[in-house]
Every structure is written in C-alpha cells, then in structure tokens.
Image 1 (tube, rainbow, N blue to C red):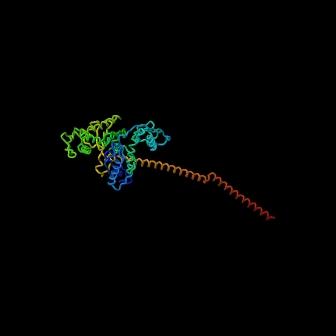
Image 2: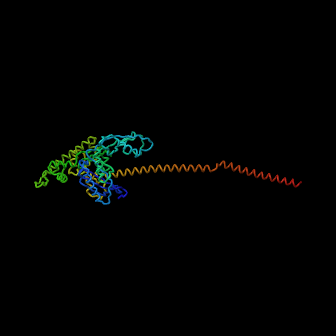
Image 3: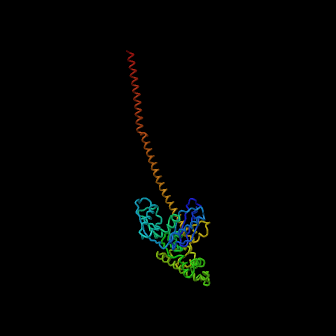
Length: 469
C-alpha cells in the first residue's frame, strides 16, 4: 500500500441508509478499502435532511461501525454526497481577457475563469454547489479540452453549474459538523456514482448514469468525455416500497422485504401461479400476495422513472445513436430483477448494471461491490482527484518558482562573470602600451648608457690635461 497517499472517507447520507467508507490508493492506482460502516437512515426523506437529530445519530453509528472495522482509523474529514428535489443545473459561458498574452495559459487562468462563474446570478434561496467546465475556447479555437500551455488573448469555456437549496445544504452541513466531522466538499451523487462505475472508454463513448436511490433517481449524461446534463428525478426505491404497501395492504417492512426478495421490474417475467404468504397481524389470517400483482406495481413505478429518463435525454438531444455506451444502472434500486430488459424496452438504449468495482483493489468485502455503494466509493475517488490536482498544481508552481530562481541565479552568475572579466581587462595592460613602455625603457637605458660614456670620455680627457699641467 502507498503510505504517502492520504486516507479519504466518503459519507453517503441516503434516504434508506447512511454509509461511511475509508480508502487509500495503492501503488497501482487501485482503491484499498480500509474501513466500512453503515446504519439505517431515519432523518432523511427524498435525499433531504428533515430531522437533524436522527441524522446525527445515524451518521455517528455509521462512523462507529466504520472505525470498529479498523480501530487504527482516525476520521475527521469527509466527502459528502448530495441529492434531492432541490438540486438544479444550468449552462453558462464565461470568458477572460489575459493581459500577458506572451505567457502560456496557466492553471491560475483556469481557476480565475471557474471562480468567476460562482458570481452567476441565481435565485436568492439557492447556492452554487459545483462549477464544471465542459469545453474551452482560446481565441478562435473551440472544443478544447485542455488549454493549459497554449497561447491566446481570450480564454473562455462553457460551464455546467449545479445549484441547491441553501437550507437543504445547511442542514447537511449541520448534521455532519455536529457529528464531529468537517466537510471537505459536497459532491453531486450521480457524479460520484459515475466515477465509481465508469471507465475512460465509457466517458468517451457516451453514457447515461441512472442512479436509483431510496428517495430519488439521479441522472448524469456524458458524451465525448464531457458532462452534458444532470437531473434529479423525484422518485426512487422508497416510492416503490410505498406503492407496494398501499397497493397490497401490508406493512412497510413487509413491502420492502417483498420488493427485495420477490420483486420483478417486468411483470411478464413473473409467474402467475406464484404467491407470497404474509403473516397476519394479531391473530389475523395470513395473507397471500400474487407475485404477478407485485410485479405490476413495481413495473408501473419503474416505468414512470424511466419515462423521466427518456424525457431528459430528448431535452438535450441525446438519442440511442449518441449513447454508444448505453445506460448504466446503479444504486440500490438497480438490483430489481429484469430491470435491464425494462430499461431497454422503455428507452431503446442498451443497458447494464454498474458495479463499483471498476477502481477497487482485490481483497475487499463482497458487499462493497453492490451498486448501492457506488456513491460512497465514488466520493473517495473524487477526493483523490482533488488531491492529485492539488499536488499537480503545487508541483507546477514549484517547477515555475524553481525555474524562475534558476534563471535569476544564471543571470546573476553571468553578471558576476562579466564583472570579473571587466576587472581583469582593466587590470591587464594594453599590448600597445606595453610595447611603448618597453621602447621608452630601452630608450631611457640607451640614453643613460650614452650619458655615462660621455661622462667617462670627458673625465678621461680632463685627467690627461691635468697631467700635462
């Protein structure tokens, strides 16, 4: 295991369950699961926290179970999934004009472009959860996926902005903080699920993620590696359970159990002569439920959910020819028998079940491969994506600073070398001056010699004259 990688914890606050999973990437880039815990959820309805106290208790229980699975864990910070009826999305366009056009487009330019989108005007009761770039534009060049390193005056992008109700977000924050944790980031649940069940080929081919949770069904559509659309459909597995409860006159726990054990999403596949015996209440006679009738109830609600999926796909112009990767069904509700056949029949698009084992290392417990844990696993992957992006940005900043420092050092060294050369040139005499000085010295020596000879001759004649006298 890669001990340098951080341990990241995903917290999925769902309508029917709250799950906490701790993981760390190994040296092969696969996710090692270090802790897992879950608890029933009683304070959440349709993906929204309505009872903070009950939600806090459920979060604490899930965390205690997670730590119990690995006593060495210390959990202080979590990535949290968010969904619910209040989630909305919109498309925007943003541009910046760069002052230093000679410099390359940097991560700082992209961050400025994204941060500007948080100033987008939205209803006062809403809050921006995430800003996701789709395609970049540099001057006249369009459909650019990675503009860093390019040159240009004007840099722009199309953005997918996800918003949510301020009070709903505040309730999630309070529930998590009062549980003794800090939220590192809120992540839209279908995006987290998509990260867990998809590979790079899926993103490129074009797929629709349909995450059937307890309170809502979340939709995310990807095409050519770009997030094209997100939506929250206000129906999920709990609605099916309530339909069974009301339609067959049974308890909610009995309805849930029948849905899981005997439920069919396609009524034609259910046997008409099969029956389920339900114990009577307080001495009442047992009740027999037709599996065929149960399947009809389930199919009616599932067909309604899939009709919403078809509606959203038509809204963005995505037909079966564009979704080469088909529809990926995930979440707890995707485990209904024959749901794939019903999905293909309703949408006309190939479908499959998305299991969150795409990025998991071997050795994990089998339960974690169930679609209901896709969101939680995806939250950990989202955390690692942030960690790797931050590390890459720091490395780029370090390289930039180091390069600048080396350039300054090189310039200083060159300047020092120039100074030394100038001083040496100043200290080193001019060859012509040296020759002139040597000539002067020779002339001076010759003059001195001649003067001495002249003096000796004069002295000699003077001595001869004195001798004659």
